[in-house]
Image (cartoon, rainbow, N blue to C red; front, side):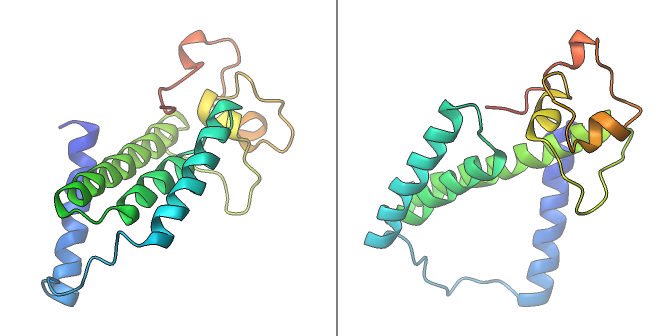
Amino acid sequence: MTDTDKVLCEVADERGRQDAKWGKQNDHPDGTGTQSARASTALIRDAYQQAFARGAGTWSLILAEEIAEAFAESDRAKLRTELIQVAAVAVAWIEAIDRRATRRGGRTPPAGTPICNECWIHDCKNCTGRNCWHAERDEHYVEDDEDEATDGDTP
């Protein structure tokens, strides 16, 4: 079973819990395609592009941009395609979280601990070490291991 299969099983389990709690939800309007949604999409896309251009892109920006595109869409077929993209990014993000935890022996930093984006993405190869939980406290940190330099988490 692939990492994606495992995450999708968790998603299917959650969908089952939602249906058990709320029943099938078919009557809500989509609520997408509004002028304000289209305007917000342009702003979010601009922030996304600027962040990645300066090397500061994040999973939250990737997902926000995909959600904004879905919210801006009024055509049902295109909306469905956008929502598949939202789900795919969410699954990819979960997989990245799981890979980071695996590299750290299943450990995650304590709640409220300052985290350096560089160490999460590049395994501390480029981390300054300031306020960095991983570089200072994780026995799985390997400074000279070239194989750990990147993990494919960035798009």
